[in-house]
Every structure is written in C-alpha cells, then in structure tokens.
Image 1 (cartoon, rainbow, N blue to C red):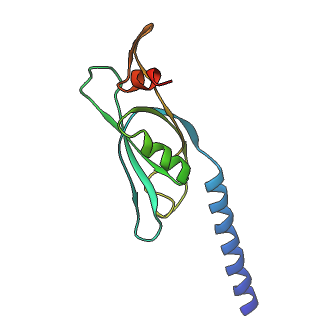
Image 2: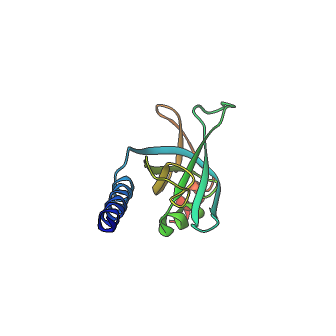
Image 3: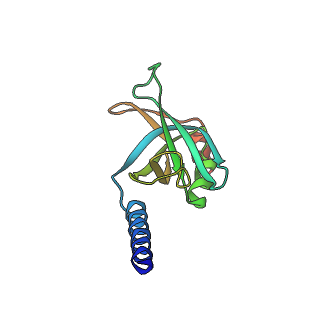
Length: 140
C-alpha cells in the first residue's frame, strides 16, 4: 500500500515538473511592442524578477495611452532596457501561458530583446528623428 502511494506521489511530481518545463519553453504567442519604457524595477519577496511598464501610443498626438506590462528574466536584457529608458524602443516578447505563482513573473509577457527606434514615423514617408538621435549620429 505504501509503495502505491509513493509511486503515485512520484508520478504526480513528474507530471507537475513536466508541465512546468513545457509551459516555460513553449510560447503561446510572440511579437513586438513599440513605445517608451516608463517604469522598470526589480521586484519580489523571494523570487526577484524585473517588472516593467511601456507606454504605447497608437497615433501621434493621441491622448489615449495604452500600457504594456512585462517581465524580464535575462540580466543582459534588463541592462539594455535600463540604458534606453525614456527613449522609444521596440520590445520583443514571448507570451507564456500556464505558469503558476509570481516566481516566474507578475505578467504573462516575457521580454527577450530590445531595439532602439531612431525615428518616429508619422505617415508613410514622414519621420521625426528622436531627441538624442541627431547627437549620436553627429558623434559617429
């Protein structure tokens, strides 16, 4: 009887471990979001993760701002995001579904890369250079 209970517990632990491994490696979706990172901090009681907030503007001059909340696990990506705070960036993310607890992060969106956007497109063929882009171009 004890052997059956022990085998059932081991089987349950293996199933739970397999689910965590599958959910961590599989992405429900992936994509990019463009905007300005306005908040980024390392948070958590036990499991520390980088949590951020990106302001997205759909149209120039629009007063409605949508926020994209995200999590970062990779220290190199977190350092890259900290360097471009306040500038327009594209964040590449993967959406993970089925990860329990906040030890994995407070959101379902895990940022894996960041790209600085030098120009803001108003309409096809009309762009506005970002502040600082001209200075960095002049220093090259």
